[in-house]
Every structure is written in C-alpha cells, then in structure tokens.
Length: 128
Image (cartoon, rainbow, N blue to C red; front, side, top):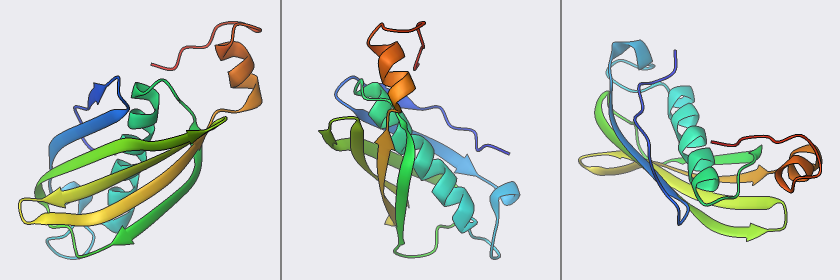
C-alpha cells in the first residue's frame, strides 16, 4: 500500500521525492486520500531527520490541508527545522505543479534505548 517513493536525502537534513499517485491512492474522486498525504509527509519528515543524522520516531505530526491534492504527478520536500536534545523538529510540503497542497510539521524523538545504542553503550542499531 505504500506509495512508490524514490527519496533523495542530503546530509544537511533535507529529503525530497517526485512521484505519481494513481487511482489506488484516491479518496474523493480524482483526489489523493488525506491519509495517504499524511503517510507521505510523515515518511519525508522522518527521512529528513535521519538524513541530518538525527533519526527518531514520530512523536507528533501536524498537517494543514491547504487545498485538495489531485491524483497525478506530485512532489514532497522536507527539512530539519531545529534540534532540541533528543527531539528533531522537521517541516515538509506536498504539492503539484500548481503549488503546495499540504504543509506538515513533525517532532521526531530518539528513544532512550536507541540513544544508548546510537552512542555505543548497547548493541549497535542502524538508522539508515
């Protein structure tokens, strides 16, 4: 069910993807289901956090649906906004050729057990 995303990551904490969503992702006629938009944005936000070396699990995900997202060719871009301890704050957009359709913000938290593994105090855990 996951949309076909080929995600590009930059070590500065950015991630993006250009992709096509067809009928399998339809909600209202001709439009992307809002839950699919949320899924894509959550993935891009997490990929941006990870690309910047600050991986984590989604703590919060806030979406603003600006207008309906049509089925077809789309673009999603995300970046790290800031880091506060174990929390990484990221922002992203989803849109089509006419502009942004959905804005998102997420907080990604690296749990204590993962921080310990990441810092080498437990068995190694990979985040890529």
